[in-house]
Length: 65
Image 1 (spheres, one colour):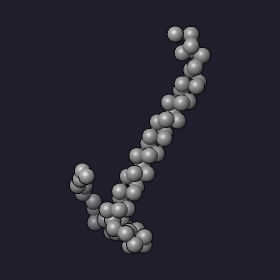
Image 2: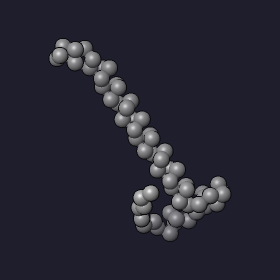
Image 3: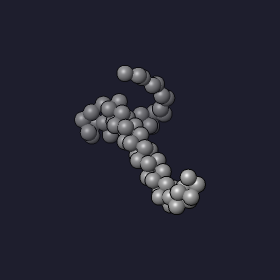
C-alpha cells in the first residue's frame, strides 16, 4: 500500500478526529473513505459527461465516419 503525508491545521485535524470519534474509527479511516468516495464521484462525473457529449453529437460523429 502507498502512503501520502499531508499537513492539516490543528482545526482540521480536530474536526476529523471528532468525526472519527463519533463513528468509532480512526481519522485515517475517515480520510480513506472520503477519498474513495471522491474518486468514485470523479469517475462517475466524467463518464456522465462523456456519455452526454457522445449522445449529443452522435449524428455529427456518424457523418464524420
